[in-house]
Structure formats: structure tokens, C-alpha cells
Length: 225
Ligand SMILES: Cc1ncc(CN)c(N)n1
Image (tube, rainbow, N blue to C red; front, side, top):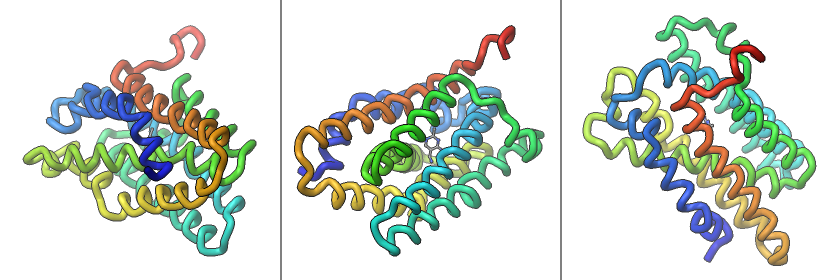
């Protein structure tokens, strides 16, 4: 079994909980309360700013010129394609790009981005790739699953979100990260693999918690905002 398949198997119960989360189901059947989606969009935007920084860091830590260029491409795709989806949704919701960028990160957003940044800054390239993989891979899986629901991609509000995450271009990023992880993991001792498994498990948990936070619109208590 490849290392990525081992990680996927270990985190499967968490991934399934994400797939079955009412937030995700609500996007799929079009019933999600727009206020919850608005909360998610704003938090996701500030999350993606730090996620983009990780691609810049990955480019610096990359082991070849080819991989440097690929990480630079992912940085560009996140800043200019994925985040553009957020800017477009924001416009439809009456939020300006400036307001979106000035969103105050909620505790869970801050915890997730800070965890990924600290693991990636302290560790080597494989730590970074392991930390970001659930982000790219699980959204692609969710996108594909939701796209199977008849009419979901044509939904007048949530259709574009599903169309983006099920896209071939988005899938290529996930596939490339999976392949790179498996290459980097070759020959590593079990103690190292187990340490990486913990990182993957943690960011999978954070992915679930991000849906949970968004569904409940959980931020700082109003008196300490
Ligand atoms: C929290 C989260 N995780 C993953 C993705 C997909 N890049 C995202 N936009 N937001």
C-alpha cells in the first residue's frame, strides 16, 4: 500500500464525517443557509491567504526546479483562481474585496492555519506536503461526490462552488501532491511515517472542524472580539 493510501485509510472516518456534515450536505442539495455560507466564505478567504503562503514556502523548500515551478503554479492558482471564486461570491453577497480581506480570523481558522504554518516552517518539505494534502485532496473528493447529485452543479448559488472543486484542474493539484508525498516517503523509517501520519490526521481533523465552525458560525465571543 502506498503511504498516501495508508494515510487516507487512517483518516477515513474523519473524511466520511466531513462528507456527511450538514454544511457539506446543504451545499449538495442547495438547502444551506446563505448566512452560514457567507461566514464560511469569509473565514475561508483568510484561511487561503495563509494556505497560499505555504505554497511559497514549499517552493523555497522544493527539491528540484520542476517542483519549485509546480508549487509556484499552485500559489498562483490559489491566489488567482480559487480565491477569485470567493471574491465573486462576496460580490454577490454585497461584500467588497477589501472587507473580505479584512475578515478577522475566528479561533478555529487561526488554529488551523497556525498549525499548518508551524509544522511547515519547522519541518522539511514532506512535513509541509503532508500538512496541506487533506486540504487539496478532501475538497476534490467532496467536489466530485457533490457533482454526482443530479442538478447540484447547476444550482443557481452553490453550483459554482461545486464546479470549482470537482474540476480536473483542482484534481490535478491533489494528484500531484499525492504523488510527490509518496515519492518523498520512500525509504523513510516507520517512526518518521508515524510522525507524518499524525500531521495528516490533525489537518484532517481541522478540515472537519472548519465545516463545524462554519455551520455553527463560531467566532470569538462578542465581548472579546
Ligand atoms: C478550509 C479549507 N480546506 C481546503 C480548501 C481547498 N483549498 C479550502 N478552500 N478551505
